Image 1 (cartoon, rainbow, N blue to C red):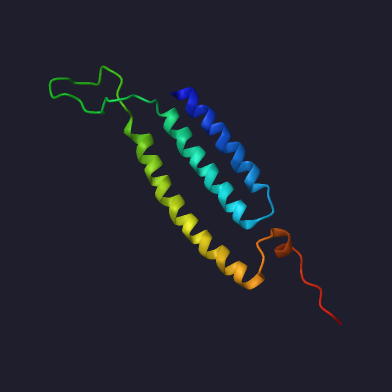
Image 2: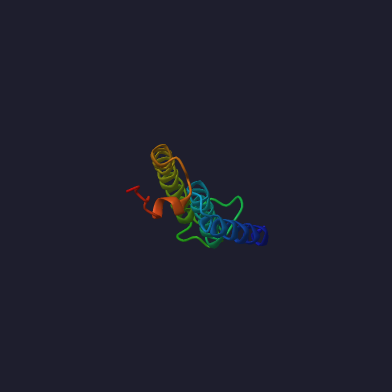
Length: 118
């Protein structure tokens, strides 16, 4: 299972970097979203996947003696998902406004000033 997730992480990072290097603003946003998803899965994999063992200590035990699922990476991922959703929503509104003003989503057209007719 972890090997499959590692391959998915690699594909998401590769796809995200490829999309960021494109000239379109929409592809840039999609690349950032792919990188965020890859990072969330990476944090999940680094937190160790333990199936069916909640982090609850019995009242008779003093410490955890078996391996349990770590809730901290899951909490970090949940927070990152909420933040990335808000960032994506803001970026979509911003891209829509830029497209309405410039009438293109090409990043090169945003960087070069228009030549004025004299």
